[in-house]
Amino acid sequence: MADVRFEKLAKENKMLYSQDSIYGIKSRYHVCTNYKNDGIKETFSIRFSLINLTDEDRQKIVDYVNEKRDTLKLSSVDFNQNLVTIAFGVVPTKNNMFANALQDITLFFARNGFVSGCSVSQTDKNIKFIPYRGQVIALAPEVYNKINKEDMAVLIKNDQGGYLSGAIGAVIGGVAGIIPWVLFGSLGRITTLSGFLMSILAKFGYDKANGRQGQKQFSIIIIVTIIFTYIGIIASETFKVVRDLMAQGYQLAQISVSKAFSLMAAFPFTAEGVGSGIWRIILLSYLFTAAGSAIFLYKVHQGLGEETGDTLIYSVPQPSIQ
Image (cartoon, rainbow, N blue to C red; front, side):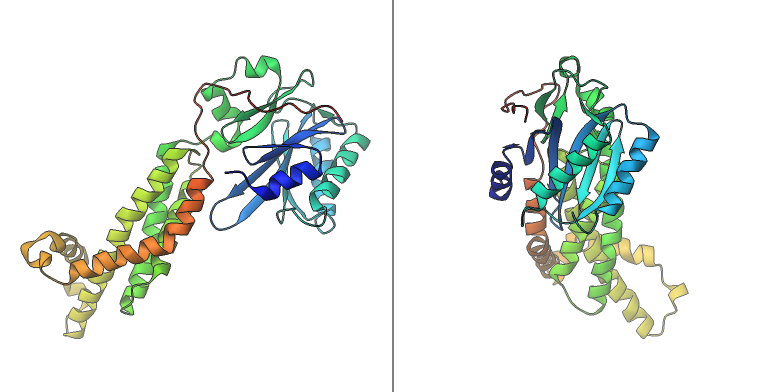
């Protein structure tokens, strides 16, 4: 879905807009932006391909970004081969922030003799803008004619991970998400915050494990949220049982917490459990989870691009040199 803020921003700066990317050529530098919204915050960065960078050149850029933190609202810089990504501390859609930063950065590059080129090769010839995996990148003909999914998994930082590693990270996040269920359950409460934190932590774990970006990511997070919400509910109920037994005089050492948990996990599906109030707690908990995580998960889904496999799409307009 197009974001009218960025369409307007692209138009104001005489640039083009596609796939949440503002792109074009400014002062002979190929410019691409990268926008993400993970449901918690928005991030905006601007990418340049600068060929033949030395360690000294990279240090100059780092020093420049640090110097401009306050005046241009720059926050950090990342290097991936010859791809230079400068992040903003805020989304620069107001008060000519983007235009001012773009002018200042390209002037800095020009003064230091930096040369613009392909984002994954050391060439400045015949660069074209290509939409690939949800963002627009600058590529040379010899690169986009040979490129494939495996190459991009190495060359494009966002695609270095896999779904399996992401799923493992999401599971670890789900385990952490059990804690709020137990804490709030110990107070006798079911809250949307528990469900919200569960989905947040699953997504956080997926990203930290360098999980692959794609539509399957959304399914993995949903599945982990559903499964670990149930585990969180059972853990909360087990905590209550253990607490009640201790109130009756039992010592913790006399109680098998793991056995109590396994019995509670199976209880809703027994004849006694089907007619008990446990299902009311489970259904109410899932209702609160849905209410707490729906907006966040919707934004996660909106932020995912369709996978293109080995096929490159050339359907974006090419800007003229300015």
